[in-house]
Amino acid sequence: MAAKGAHITQNIEIKPSLFEVLAADSLNTTFYPAIKRVVDFLATSKPAIFGGLVRYYDEFYMLFNGLVQGYYLNRHGGSLAEVFYGLTRISLRSKTFSERDRNWSFAVLVFLPYALGKLEKMCDHWKEDYESGKQVSVERRLLFRLVPFVKAFYESVKLIHYVSYLCNATDTHSPSLRILRLGLTYLSEEEETWSFKDIFQGKIRLATILSTALLRWLELSAFFLQFIEWWQTEANIGDLSKLPIPDAPGPDINASKYANVCPICLQKHIIPTAVSVSGYVYCYRCIIDHLQKESRCPVTKYPATIKDLIGIYTNED
Image (cartoon, rainbow, N blue to C red; front, side):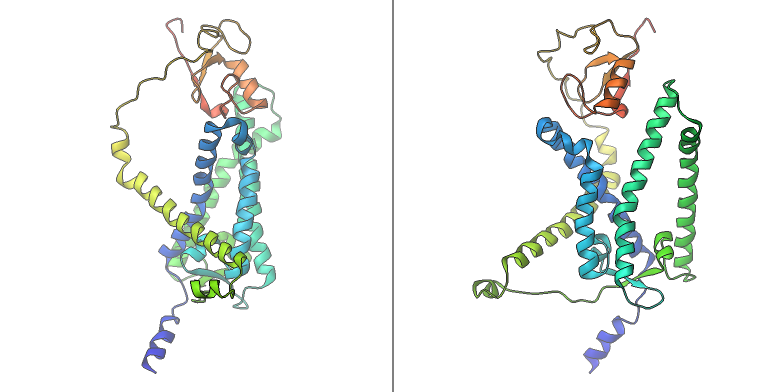
């Protein structure tokens, strides 16, 4: 009786702490850049095979995120990051997690970040065009100027929700969860267990074994990503700047061919601009026009964007 009473007492506190919900939010935002680094590495190693993943990374990540979040929402009632920290979603009205709540949660976790990311990239593109002297409509100029203020307003609203949640003035810590009228509570400890004996006796299907192994790998990867993020930002950020600078790689077969000329127009450089991922120097206008059409270095075919350009200043400048 005493043991059962102690078990019941542990579940009376159903509201997670602010640190737990913030940890889940932080982990959820870690997946996109972490997987992006893996994709960039693969594309750099094999541009012909994995180059398409860089150009359509947002779509690839939306598909991956949809599969993962859809499973965890259907199986555990929360996102991967929330379930990783032992949390699940619950309606603030009915104290359940209905199919409607699940569908709206899926849309907010998968489709909304994709749409906002695309909008932000378009605004950055319009801003670069405007700063380069291209014609940009008044509506687009207004939009890319308005985006920073909208982001600042949203971050302020998030801070207000954090403080309200910490003071027990509200049952939800997130503006998106508040709109959906959902809150977070502790996940009940219900886990399907099986042994190797069950496998040999044929009681467990192969699909169940593979899905369980995949999900355990995802959860372990989530922990690894959190550790790497902490290690880079807290433990080793000072040492990275003290590492010796490696020697520059030797020239390749195209180095002499494009010496002192732009590889695109084959003329003397006008506003010489280097692509940091390859080191080749182009005319500013030539490489800008090329990267807007095709996101890779014209010579090496390495994935590249306008953000990878570096201006070169000579004595003549």
